[in-house]
Image (cartoon, rainbow over all chains, first blue to last red; front, side, top):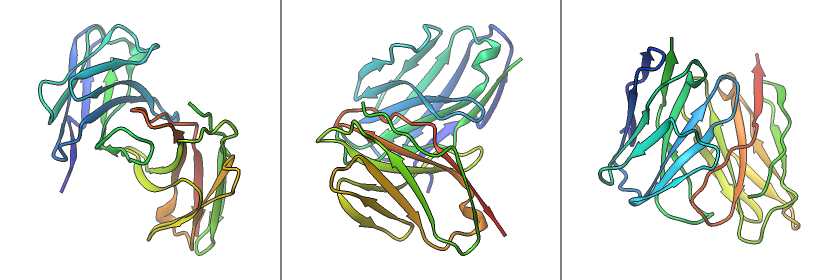
Length: 114
Length: 109
């Protein structure tokens, strides 16, 4: 039944060692998002795709990159993780542009940088 | 993007009705109001969405006054399992889902 699937659920990586988080969807939605959520904070939008068009938030560090090879999959690459990148990373999708839509979230990947 | 303001936290008891009000003074004509629920270590989950007046589904009701500068999420007869963070969002017909600070609801036995 899972519609937005994130792998892995938990990831530990070393300081400075590149890491990739993955997200897949079975909903065939056009829009995919990546959020970062630190402890006791609200999710913070990093970037989103509308189809293949990539849109980066102005304050997203260059250290964070994303790839969307097809409709179903989206990846978050952290090139040189720092201790401050320890967080939950959430992937979400939505079917269309417009205020009268909803976002569907995955369970998240909890990343710990040591 | 309209900014939202919610209470940081609320306490309630099982069986009570809980009303969480969100202020969004700068809401634009095309903005919709959406509420999400998030449990610890899980992704947010859509609860309800509305544009004006009242919307009800199997989980909650959403009340939006005529000026649309605020909205109230109403959870009938809460249980312990409703303990979560509740986020109010407004956004215009674009791509983004931007979260405010959220309200931590604690339901006690």
